[in-house]
Amino acid sequence: MLDPRITSWILEFVLRQPAEDWMANELLFALPLPSPLSPRLKKILLLRRLSSDLSRPSLSARTLLSLELIEELERYAGAGAPSNSLAAAYAAVAVECTTRFLRERSDDDHGEDFFDAVNRIWNCRVADLERSEAAGLFSPALREARREMEEAIVNPVVRVGLTGRDTKKAALDAVRVYLEEAEKEMGPPYLEHLAKAVCEEWMSSGTGRDGSVVELYEMLRNLLASQGERGRYEGLPDGNTAKSSGLLGFDNYEDSVLGRDKDAPEQGAGKGPNNDDDAIARPNLMNQDPSDLEHVEENRERASLSFVDKGTKDGNPGTTTCVGDKRDCAGAPKPSLMDWNPTARTFEWDEDSIESPSENSPDPSNKLHLPSAKRREISLPLEDNKTFVKRRRKKKWSSLEEETLRKAVERHGVGNWKFIKSCHPEIFKDRTEVDLKDKWRNMIRCI
DNA sequence: CTAGGGTTAGGA
DNA sequence: TCCTAACCCTAG
Image 1 (tube, rainbow, N blue to C red):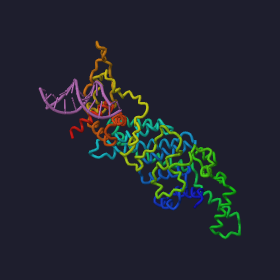
Image 2: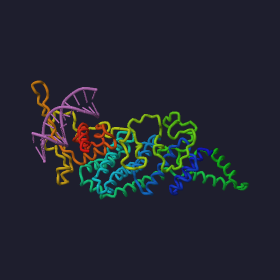
Image 3: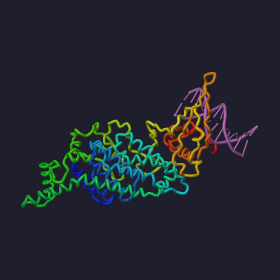
Image 4: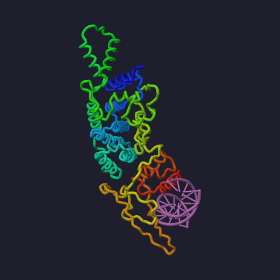
């Protein structure tokens, strides 16, 4: 078996060539993957995936995931806040992954896919991001984009504006800028430096060489033995530079392989998805399940960092976040004043604010701001110390609410009313989970 | 928090 | 007056 260091160098070299994906895959197929993958190799793989997304060009949840994982890799390597270009690329891709549903909508799609994408990406994914250790990616641009998406939910004028914007080009450009920056920061492949050193050694050693592979290999070994630290090669970033780039170098990788890693976060017993005892052979690295690259470390508690969306591994919409794991999309604190207390039975809605703008405002400009769910207390103490309870005014369910509920039940199942409401806080802002349950009961009665 | 029975508003 | 959707209550 090849020395894992050499395997890593070859992998890095292959992955960073401009060859097409299938060609890189063919080459990779012949090489056993070292285990565990070094952070540097992981990043190179992720950069390659980004590059692949750019060349197709196809930006999807997979692209978002790659960017998130890069941030995570760099963070665990102690690189500090993510670069501006990384954060900018993330924001631009998130916008594109949402607005493309506006461009691509079919005749029978009344925007449900877009609403679903807003929920999936902004209410779930970005909300998770903001609360997690990866909050460095939550840039002002991302915050502004989220505000715009939330407004687009209730304001068709904003949706039209988004549809007319070339968010795809903006996202592709942003990813391209980040890739160029990352490539530059990473420096040339290690193998190139090694080859250069061998050539120099060859040129300087004079006569007496037979040019055989054995001789070359011997020279390589001597070279490694005498100058093993890659920082000594001209042009290679030294250890500090490598650190600042957010990645451990191959030296660190070697330490890791040998169990000498002091800097890396605790890796438990070295077991994890990528930590099989034997090297892993994967037929298609470029399409490898991102979750295989997910864990920079396995044993550290990452309470709020739930990046990897098992449902998005194929990048397909509609099968993502909030599925299965039942995490609360709206998440922890929900200070939104738009949410009303379902148990507040001693309040009544202000007559002026009860109407849905989407149904009753013919002028779209009037829909710019949702009326606040104002309410006033009307509890009237009665003689027997009970409270006078005013019923809420009846409000007919809109087709959007019905359709959202129908799809949500399809996806999350009957009975998860609280969860469904939290996944669509805007659409169901005037409904309680009990309302959702009652509505579903009515809907299935009609069938 | 949910399920299921009860109540009520509003339209036919 | 009846019917139904929306809303309320409460046991588990």
